Each structure stands twice: as C-alpha cells, then as structure tokens.
Image (tube, rainbow, N blue to C red; front, top):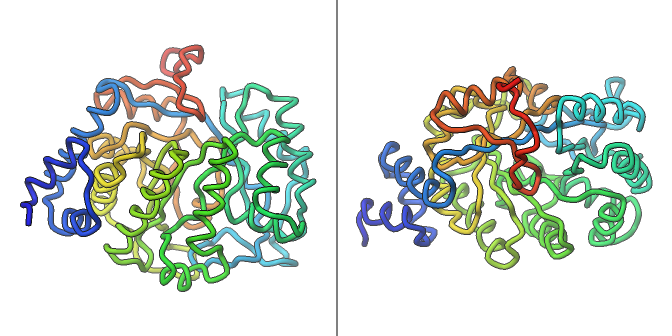
Length: 362
C-alpha cells in the first residue's frame, strides 16, 4: 500500500487516484499537506499569477416548485400564497441591470414550475439574446430540463435542442447535490436520480453545450459518498470532456426543513483539495464564496482553486437558506489581489476578457 506522501506526490503530478486512494487521502491526509498538493497541481495547470472571475447574475424567476427538496428554503408549493413567477419584462429588467454593470453571464434559474411550458422559456431567451447579445445565457438546471420534458411530453434532448436554438448556450451544474441514490432519497426524493442527472448532462455536452458540475456537501452524506460523487463526474468527463469546471459548496441549514449543522471551514478546504486532486480531467476548480464568504474564498485559492466564481449580482436561493454573504466586483478583485494573485475577468467559456476593465481600475 502506498504511503500518504506517495499518494500526494502522485496526485500533485497529475496521476490518477483510485476510489480507495482518494477516500484515504480525504480521511487521513494532513489538511496542510493535502492543500499543498492541490495547490501544486493547480499551479501546474494554470498561470501561477492569475485568478479569474466572471461578472454574472442569478435571476430566480420563480419559487414555485413541485420537487420539494428538504434542504431548500426557497421553494413554495403550487398555489402557495408566497409563490411567485416573474414576467418576461421583470426578468429583462434584471438582465439590463446586470449588463449595465458589466455582466457577461446570465443565469436564469428557479423551481420546477409545472405551469411553465417550454414556449415560455423560448420566448424569454429569444428576447434576452436579441436585446443583450453580449451576454451568454448560462441557465436552468437538469431538474428544470426534466420538468419541461414532462410538461411537454418530449425528450430531454428535444428540450435542450429547442432551448439551444432560442439562445441558451450552456447548462449549469445545479441540482447535483450528491450523486448517490441513498442521499437523494433522503434529501430530495422527487428530484431526478443520479443516472438521469448524468444522462441529461451527457446529452447537453453531446449537443455542444458546455456544462459545469457542482456538489452540495454537508447534509447527510458520508465521506465515501462525497468521493463517489467525484468518481461518477470524473467517469462522465472521461467520456465526454464536456464539463468546464467543478464548483463544490456547502449546505446552508438555518432555514431549511432538513436543518442540521453547517460545514466547517476546514471541511470546505478539504473538499476543495481532494476535488482538485481527484478530478484530474477537470480544467477548473471554482471557489464558491457565496456560502463560505470571501475570507475563506481567499484561502480556497491555496487549496486547488483557480477561479473565484461570479459576482452574482442577484441571487435568492442560498440567501433564503440563511446565507448573508454578498460581494461587489471590487470586493472580489480586492480579495484576489489580497491573496497575492492578479484578478482577470473571464466569460462563460473561460476566455479571458481583456476588453472589460477591472472595477479596481475605475
């Protein structure tokens, strides 16, 4: 059996970890040594001086949802007095506000609302594309795609084709949580099961739509189930190469039916580090500052992350669960610079946007 030091050396050089090796490192490696190996790998893969971020917004167009996840404080059942669905004009107002602040990525996401058919989204995306062609529509989720397929009586592939034609360019990795059936049955029994989530992602990637992958950890899953989640993502990436980035974030329990405890900062850093080492075929690892905050986001840049995520000009789901973290473009740039890196703006496809001025240069 290789020593922990040998496993870390191999992984830091890009060598592949087997499942049991990844689990062993996650459970037993010293947090500083694990982080150092992840940082070494990140420095080999990307410019040592640069950390990227994207100017984006998340517009939660409806909170009506028929999936009823126990970890979610945002959703409202159908006919609930607090349920809402924005009009297209209301969504476009928020898109304009974001684009006026320099946003190049528009994430439009919400609950799985059975009252909305695919035509509603086609018309919305066509308007966004026509009025704001400089912004990429990086929107919806696997759950919303499956919901639309059910409402329309068509395949998820056909849903993706129609939305792509309307202007949706890429598919976020939302709704992955933990891609292990035991966990999903406990925290989101009505949500698409792991194989279906992976299948829709495969379809999107085969249609030329880049996607991201996420992990929400800290609810009820075990360490082995966290590694299993990474393992199935790595297997699909071996097959398609269609994931652009991995974004782990931790569960915020305070106002949710599931409740529980929030993950610690050390736990977050350990997840980041093992993710960078285990996902050897993922180009980018993103620090999700929205749940841990910018201070821990700075530390994440030394535990495998090469990207600080988005400005998230507007977002409601995580805030409804109890997160209070907010950040401006200037805050993110100052955090990156304060950690010793150069902030560089990117787009959805990880192209560097040298044509967009930094907020700190204004």
